[in-house]
Image 1 (cartoon, rainbow, N blue to C red):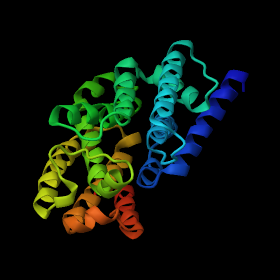
Image 2 (cartoon, rainbow, N blue to C red):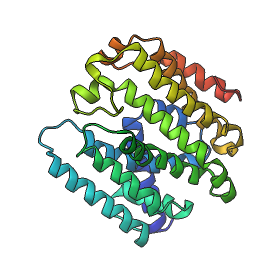
Image 3 (cartoon, rainbow, N blue to C red):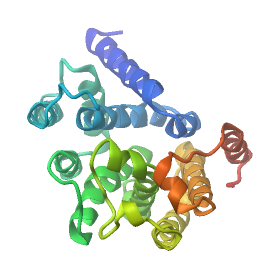
Length: 281
């Protein structure tokens, strides 16, 4: 193995370690990806996790100004690595190697960091700012993954991109609802426009979930058209969050406000087994 090849391999392994340390449902899904897509997607998500950690780490020593500076540095290093093909940051290096090979460019990277930066300056959203935030924080990440899925089928990317964006949006909004209490009480954020967490009702919950389920349904339409190396993994990711959506719909709004709702490990295992058998839950 060449020195460059060894460094690439170590960088990819480092990105995989980041994912294993942070991920739950995502980790279940990525195990079903074929190689090299599995390593590519883990390298993409590792950068996402690092940026998210900069923004959300509750350590009070990390002031908003320090977080913003760290985020600016990470974005600058990422964009530089896209051009010079090398970074001393192993996670950035792993991401940039995948990005260059799969066609991930500034048009996806810059909106992502813009949304991460918004978490440092905005505590509430209107419909326009939420749409922009979800695009940058989730939809572009789904598009990055789709680039990795379809690297050998460029025409498929354009055809499947709308569904990928819907999947990213649906998953993000499920997270917003599941994490409603922590976002408000710990991070001081409310993502859903016009929602008052102190008067959160079952009707509010159902309206939000109707929108989420619409996103997930549209995303599901494209799963059979994905390459075989990614189809089952995407089905698992979709179905895990669809199951969480169903669980949230059965949970009183007041309870969602108090605690983080989750899907049981047994239910997750069943979803994975069904995907491995070639069907979705």
